[in-house]
Image (cartoon, rainbow, N blue to C red; front, side):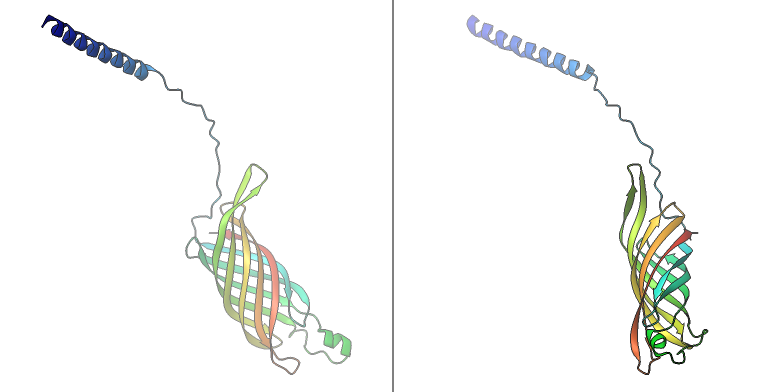
Amino acid sequence: MASGIRILLLIILCVLCAGAMAAEAETDGGARQVITPEIERRTIDVDKIDTEDFEAGIYGGILSVEDFGANAVIGARLAYHITAGAFFEGAYGQSTTTETSYERLSGGAPLLTDEERKLTYYNLSLGYNLFPGETFIGRNWAFNSALYVIGGVGNTTFAGDDRFTWNVGAGYRFLATDWLAIHFDVRDLVFEVDLLGEKKTTHNLETHTGITVFF
């Protein structure tokens, strides 16, 4: 009987010692200070499209009119951004064409007067930003940019007549600041002509660059 009591007391003593050691270990762990690394934070200024939805600007480039050579073109555009991805754009441009190869080689009377050689167009198009992202210049500069596709319909006045025109193309928009953008565009202006006695559909490639502001 006495032996059983001694064994019971020994078990109770072992349990109490184990509890005390566990409590001491927990206290030491809680008092231990956690080392917080010191990270240097960089200040980054991000240029985004301004909160306004309108964009307006001018552009200049080359318009290659089928059979009438490649000539300088200037124009203006006004865009309304419906969402972050889609936008409407209205554009107006003008150019002056040169003589055709037929006129130069035949030596005959010119096909068009000087006034009829002037080409003007306007169109309304819908664009969509396919790949919005960033353009990096060096290690310290990053600018928002977007590659977009665009297409629409309009009118071209050329050779004394108005011609229904549809256009399709692509462009690249580079945001230099939150209100100033630089554009690089390629468009195909498609309309019919019948100057040489046969009506045909012409593809007239335009490449231009321009600047726009958001307001």
